[in-house]
Length: 147
Image (cartoon, rainbow, N blue to C red):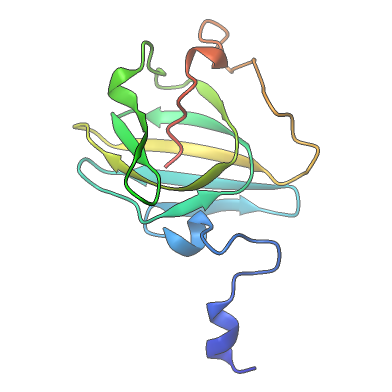
């Protein structure tokens, strides 16, 4: 197999629409090992990601917030943050389950900037109710912004 063929296949165990393969302009790896991957996720006002997935659950730390709409690959709205009763504050943490193929559009006026700590272990908890800021429990923010 030549290098061109090798580069077209995702690494073993990685979804072919993984965020780093399908949407690298909006995600960068800060740290990765066999247990976790830390992503710096940014989406500017009006920007849209390509269709991608997040195959692992993770903790999301909000550096800046903007309204967004998450769509499935067919264009059906999955989440519109403008309808959320409560929005995460800068400095809050949110738990996110793995995300099926989707794309995200920033419909707000500021950057959506999230640090995602994805947990690769199959032993990852399904739900976490604790946050770094206890005054905002994770259950207050069911619509995670993970771009």
